[in-house]
Amino acid sequence: MIELAAVSKSYDGAAPRRLFERLSVTFAAGEYVAVVGASGIGKSTLLNLIAGLERADAGSIHVDGVDVARCDDDALTALRRTRIGFVFQAFHILPWLTVAANVGLPLALLGRDGAAAKRRVDTMLDAVGLGERGASEPAELSGGELQRVAIARALVHRPKIVLADEPTGNLDPANARQVIELLRASIRREGATGVLATHSFAAARSADRALRLTASGFEPVVFAKGDAAAAGVAERESIE
Image (cartoon, rainbow, N blue to C red; front, side, top):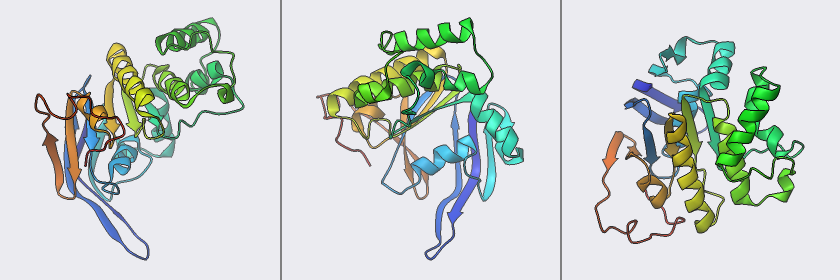
């Protein structure tokens, strides 16, 4: 579903920095993968490259068979709107729209409205436990509830890929655990491929597999039975 081959990425400026050098990784269809690593190592950049929000300096990136490097801006916008869903640390819920309107935004951008779209929004709100909150204003919801709205919005248009960037970073441990469980269950129910960038030990352990991003590439993360996570590690504790 997602394949990066020999991808390089650097940033210019007062202190030029090479972030990736010939980075290669594959995420299979229907797989839920956690990407962990030290702050600044490039986890968010990795997601941005997959989504075409940033361009690689070299190498190839294929997303659902599409060569991202060959897409112009219009094609990349269409790719994101139709095949990719996003969940961010900062929620990015629009305060001037109701909860239902926020969830339905991806459908509206695709020109889908009417009864079928409303049913899909209602279905997603029910799935995240907010079936009675569609008419609410975002200001009336807690942080955990806002992230549930973000998950519903990310999946409402049935994307093939869901990219989640530190989705529990602004949540307390109890809400973080609930959001991670909901995100994992929602991605699997919809049959999407999920890529989760996280510092959270518990979030990483919830994935089908976890990869540590380093300056030289990816390393598999192995969670042994009886480790701290199995014993109930706090969601806010980090893994690098």
